[in-house]
Image 1 (cartoon, rainbow, N blue to C red):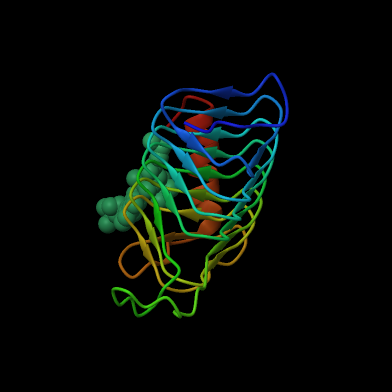
Image 2 (image 1 turned 30 degrees about the horizontal axis):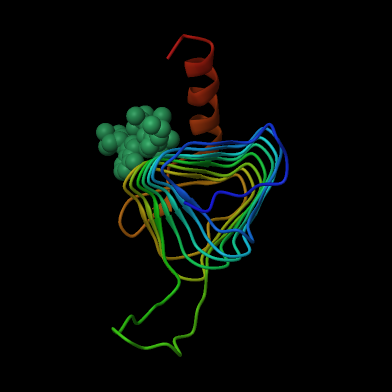
Length: 176
Ligand SMILES: CC(C)(COP(=O)(O)OP(=O)(O)OC[C@H]1O[C@@H](n2cnc3c(N)ncnc32)[C@H](O)[C@@H]1OP(=O)(O)O)[C@@H](O)C(=O)NCCC(=O)NCCS
């Protein structure tokens, strides 16, 4: 199934598809039924979950986790330390029509440290700012500023961000 990678300590579970031109960094894992397209650059310690689709010439930064069943269109840029929840769908064609090869492709940009909750949909050209959080099931139609949490459909800022950060901290300390 064409698995290829740059170093020996990469784990590529079969069956999956990794294009021969893709580079996968050290200590990264590609799980069953994932697809990594032509020219992708996957950094070190990345996990690509089962059934995830990484479109051609996409880049994924160090330590990012892409969960089961995600779709990333061609040339998507995902930074370092990002969490992309299960079944997140990113898009790049605002007005999709079957067979239109000349569409204006606008892949999303996910900046370092951002998290995207399960099942969220990211519309074409949207930028998710560094350390931002997107809630589960959101439909993100606009850029999300760095460090801010967006939820809903269409996604909008979720309450007071300081309160959300405090809740997250309490949760981590087991005092949720
Ligand atoms: C967005 C999120 C971080 C908000 O956290 P929070 O502020 O602590 O959320 P709370 O549970 O205190 O809920 C606060 C309010 O926001 C609403 N809310 C929470 N998450 C929401 C979401 N994803 N979409 C819409 N509304 C949401 C709640 O219904 C609640 O509204 P209410 O006060 O009217 O009842 C969190 O709910 C979320 O979606 N996390 C992602 C989970 C996920 O997908 N993980 C993937 C790993 S498996």
